[in-house]
Amino acid sequence: MYPTKILVTGGAGFIGVNFVKMLLSEAPDVTVVNFDLLTYAGNLASLEDSMNDPRHIFVHGDICDRKQVCSTLKKYDIDGIINFAAESHVDRSITGPEIFVDTNIKGTLNLLQCARECEVKRFLQVSTDEVYGSLGKEGMFTETSPIAPNSPYSASKASADHMVRAFQHTFGLDTVITRCSNNYGPYQFPEKMVPLCINNARLEKSIPVYGDGLQVRDWLYVEDHCSAIWKVFKSAEPGSLYNIGGCNEMANIDLVKVILSILGKPESLISFVKDRPGHDRRYAIDASKIMKELDWKPSVTFKQGMEKTVKWYIDNLPWLEKITSGEYRKYYDSMYEDREIKG
Ligand code: NAD
Ligand code: TYD
Image 1 (cartoon, rainbow, N blue to C red):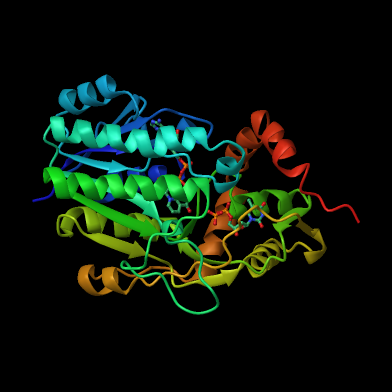
Image 2 (cartoon, rainbow, N blue to C red):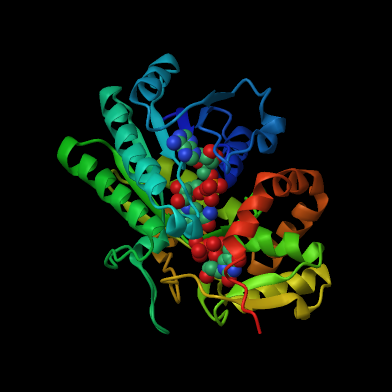
């Protein structure tokens, strides 16, 4: 039997929110303690419909705070941890890498130590395909690809993965790691490409495409990512590692064109801007291991997932408008003012 009293960290962020909602609707035997610091990326408004669920307990907490994590584990008799909490945006890691070390590396180490101390039965680390670095035109990342992170964000996630592995190997803590491709779907903070593009397009604002726009990503619908994590958590062997991908490789420029066409907006909104420093050219993920061993596969095609996603943002404009007023505007101006290519 798998753990049923689960600490979900970062459960007020994009993927965490989707995961918590999935557990509450599909796993009646599970109680979720949602542990989140509510940084700029955490949003309780996304959990409005789950706050009164007796199986969902929200704790405003910091994964770097050992006393607080341990007391929470003890108070709720937690037997499993799923760690989503992180600083997650590559561009922010370029302008300010320190917090990525604090949250992603030291925070994960702290959780691992608390998990050991409180004899937690399973620890799942949510990681990223970005730890493998960048690919050329051919090939895909497998679970045995070398780790070669290129951004401060991916370097911090790779370090955390190494620490998780070390705790399994050295202390026998039961850990599993998942590495997924780019997620898209409801509740994503509009600093990331997909919601930023939807938001700008609906307002008929220009859409900043870095460099030549020919960088390739694999796109994974967030609910499919959540179902994969849940399968891994429930049934993977201790110490195992799984890649999770959507089988949807696409160049950024084509992604933007799909979104514009769903919204019925013109391609003239596309604006090529200065590239991200060290921008990884191509990610592609081989997810055959999880498909074969755990019988997982994505439930939607890219077209279905993106249509659902665009519809969700348009149907939830108050959610989007609340985020994109205030602090977000300052972020947007500071991140994009130097990128504009003046012609
Ligand atoms: P997000 O930025 O939307 O959410 C992160 C959440 O973590 C926020 O709710 C934030 O408040 C919380 N948090 C930050 N610091 C914390 C701390 N010290 N203590 C407690 N909570 C803290 O991120 P996301 O997109 O939901 O990503 C979740 C996880 O998945 C991350 O570990 C990320 O590296 C990984 N991942 C994301 C993607 C993607 O496409 N979004 C792809 C691969 C991997
Ligand atoms: P992003 O959503 O930031 O995810 P990641 O960097 O983790 O892949 O970006 C997805 C791709 O889109 C990436 O190649 C960078 C590119 N991008 C733009 O071209 N313009 C933008 O404004 C942003 C945010 C991203």
